[in-house]
Length: 381
Image 1: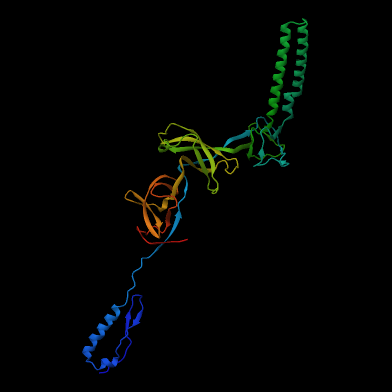
Image 2: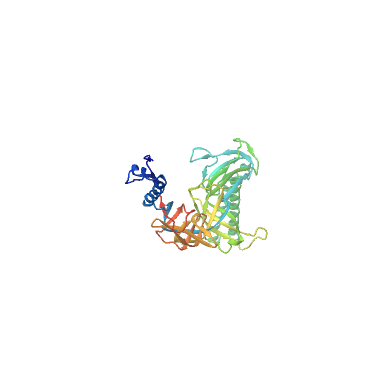
């Protein structure tokens, strides 16, 4: 029987097939009995494949991102919300009836309008009523005071020479005093026709009246606010009463000012707890010198009740908690090492680590979810 020559392949450890080499030719095996040839071929295959080295199984490296730990500060915060209000706010009404005259703003050369800045004592609106002004008789009262003062000087000179009695001289003093009061009252009554700013501020309301139209007493004239300093009233939970104290710093934020944090301070606290809401009242003063906040804005206040200035701070999200145990992963020589930690102060995103981590440790911040202790990792740049 003749055995036809074929190429025999054997699988190798790298997944590729390789040919088996025979030292003897197939013609040699053709002279042998067929039943004897098959076992020989099987033995040759096993021997050839068994002598080849098999590739060892390589552990997969998990890609991770790390953060080198540095010391920083962290604060314990108590959060609350409220409405920011202007420290000074007033609505001025007409004290007397008269004809309406809106004044010119000297800074712009145009009539006052909403948003204009005014100074204390600046005239904004003037009401005119000749009949009322004549009734005040301001000039007449000035003359009366002048005459009374001249009479008083004359009586003093006569009294020094013995020409009048003390009682006569004192009577002239009474007339001078009454004349002065009359003049002051007349000037006060005349001032009621002028609407002036009682403090430095901004015009926030200015009802429209037709020039020279007559407005009645009590009509709204102008609204003013000064909000370079603001305040907000707050209600804090009963659980915070042991933490919040007067003069503690406060961070003020608003959703329209994402990049800006204003400074505030706790100015007042009530010691009483409301039986209905289980809260206590407080007041925060806000520094708004750059006028970033506007009166009436709903703001968030973060009260700083404790602070650590040199601490190991990590994101809350990387902490794994199991059975009252907290741990994180760090990288050492491309290996994930498990570290049990103890925590301290925390804010909304970060937490202070008091034990378990050191400065310059490489904390795994991404890819830690599937890790096990001593897992091989590949640090991504």
